[in-house]
Image 1: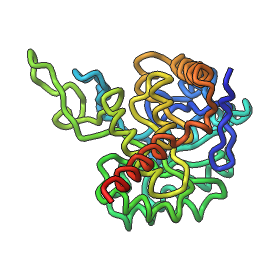
Image 2: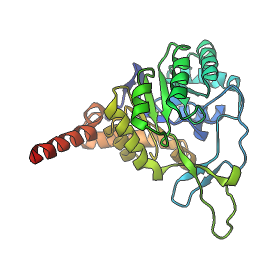
Image 3: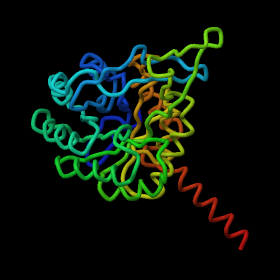
Length: 308
């Protein structure tokens, strides 16, 4: 069996497969189930200073094979998760707590969770933090100044001035998680053309297999322009999907939609398939990390040489 031990910002994961922040880890019970399903660590659903009130239904299957959701953040307050967060830590699993959204909120939550739980890292979501560089820098700096552990920015695929923002924020954060779901999007049944989600107009955010190419593109672009680690999220439902993320430059991967549709067993399944692939190709994780970027650069150099 290939060694899947992975280190990200000096945090050691027994394998690189994590639950991505979302409904799959949306309750203490789901976090506990995920922690017993072969994951290398836990990333939590985003919590904020107030519980969310999401309109039902919040998730539906899209006709292109993905999922549409209108979920926001956790519908439970952060205090409801303290016990299960501590349980995760007691198992020796690294814990990344996802928090949001304003500078004041992430500062408060970061300090509170470090005191009560001592997570190994924090993720801050950019969904409701504003799209401007100034607002993102403000949130990143507020969290960085409030905690003693690494912080990761969850990247939105609809972010304008993508490379410029990534380069600017990389001066503050310790890494990136890419990508969040894509939207707003819409799907409905032509036999009954009414909103399928509980949100206004039935608009939601797309995740799952259809966004794999978009996620790979974002991971690659982030890894190419700065040196902080990336956790690849988007469209992963097999070991090969995860291997692609690693080859595109990711240090670890996160799974959400496949865990919703296939159950928690997907985490261990993907980790096992990654190990089998590495054994079959007589490779180690470090051999394949970023290999696509290296090959693409070499190919571009050859093209430039021929043109010259």
